[in-house]
Structure formats: structure tokens, C-alpha cells
Length: 210
Image (cartoon, rainbow, N blue to C red; front, side, top):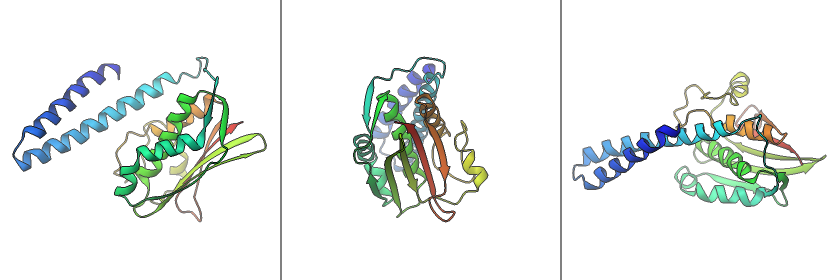
């Protein structure tokens, strides 16, 4: 993955330059498609590097506090274009949700992957719900969306590396939730999947021992 970063960055730059210089609409469209494929490869490389550095045997730096409400709103703001493009609404209830003694950098990656996945696989004109709740010495972060139906067996495979839901054409390589699972585990937490309601949609819950 490290070796791929430089040539992919060079390819992206060349494609962008060629697209700006082109006066041929058909060629411009072809270059735009190629750039999207390169962007997908860049994203995959970043995910691979993230997964590689999450060594379960390495000591985890845990000297930060993470305000989940702030992080959630930051990540939603970064995904604003995608929310508008698909006419997605959001409901956030994460007041006073602070995770103590954690690695904040990794918690940000965890939230980012949950938010991006929820947006990427949500049905157009639907709602994404994000809630955090403290109870019984735990802090649970729940991200739910309305998505295409999936079987219970498929749902339980979502944490597997490189698994992608059959028949779904969304971009990605199937590492987002595997990374969430690894980060949760490093913090002594768990990752669970349920239907949002009545066998519909998907709710992803990460539970930390707060």
C-alpha cells in the first residue's frame, strides 16, 4: 500500500491536468471516469494502511478524551455534498457523549467510517440516525440508515475484511466496518449489527466500556 501511494497520486494529477486541457467532451468524460477509479484506488490504499497499523498486539496510546458529538458533526459536515446529492436527512442525539481514556485519532476514524458507510449505502430521500447513550458503565454509539434489504447471514459478514454486500454497486473495498471492528476491539469495545426496525434498514452499534 505504501508503494502504491506515489504512483496513484501522480496518475491523479496527470488525469486532472489532461481533463482541464481537453476540449473534447467525450474525452473529458472518459478522463473523469478514470479519475473516479483512481480516487477509489486511493481510498482503498488509505483503508489498507489504516488496517495495517491497527496491530492488536501493539500497545495502544489511550490518554485522550473524545467528544463524540463534536466528532459526529465534523464528519457530517465533511460529507455534506453526499448528503445533499442523495437528499438525505440526519437526526443526531449525542449530547454529553464523551469517551474517556481513548485514542482520539482512532475514534475519529471509527466515527468517520460509520458515517461514510451509512451515507454511502442509504436509500435516496431517507434519514440517517446517529445516537450515543451512556448506561450501566458503557457508552454506545448507534448509526442507523435505511438501506437495501439484507439477510441476517449477510449482516453478520459485514465485519469481515473485503466483504461487500452482493448486488450493491457502491464504491469501496469492504474494509470500513472491519476497521471499525478492530478499533472498537482495541478499546475493549464491541461491534454489533441489527435491523433498524421491522427487518428493514441497518443499525450499527459500537459499545465502549466507559
